[in-house]
Length: 293
Image (tube, rainbow, N blue to C red; front, top):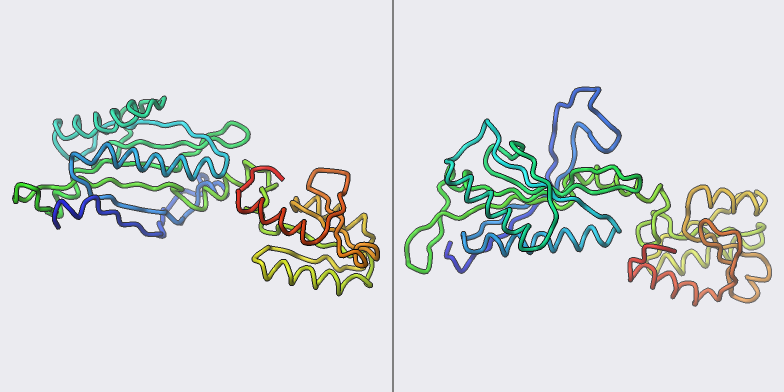
């Protein structure tokens, strides 16, 4: 590889197994196997700080999209580690400089780095104030040496790259758990497994309900129909209990007018809308990743 090839960014979704003790298991937050969005970034020494800044930009974009905030933590050299004092000082100062250049407040966690280098951990806050370690950036000068990795620099000589490990979600299972806790199951429209539930008042509106569902489904919307022979009050109540963003009541009047009576999750009043207007509204909610209904 030439210096012109760097940064070289390689990523994968990898399944990781850990033989956790039974008492340590905790729902989706600590499991025996989980999926990591693992990536390794090979950079020149001059590119380290800029690459860390790009990675934090990525973290900000992802976490802000979900409405999550984080606390940064700089972890330093543990007792059981590889490498020289000089290497560790250079690496730790590189991470510290990146955090300070960005103006991020951070906590120093002495001795909690990986055996091959220091790291920055990103702890996400959930809706009740708990923090969960998810994202991480780890500075590694040991692996490139052990695997004898080199690139040809501008001077025509061989040089050793630096490897940055990074994950954004960390454990995807844990991240899903954080989202469930953070939203208390009431996901914004773009995230909700079912974005709207169509509730025909009687069997006479069932065909109309399924026509609406097909129309919306064909546009990529996640829609279900509750065609049970139950009173409409019970259907609405159960749709609300399922925390469906939108419950769409359809009776004879709505079927005749080409409308739906829209009730947002958590609200008592309904609003009658033309089907096309509701679809456009739903699509806008999804496209903008709106955090509220």
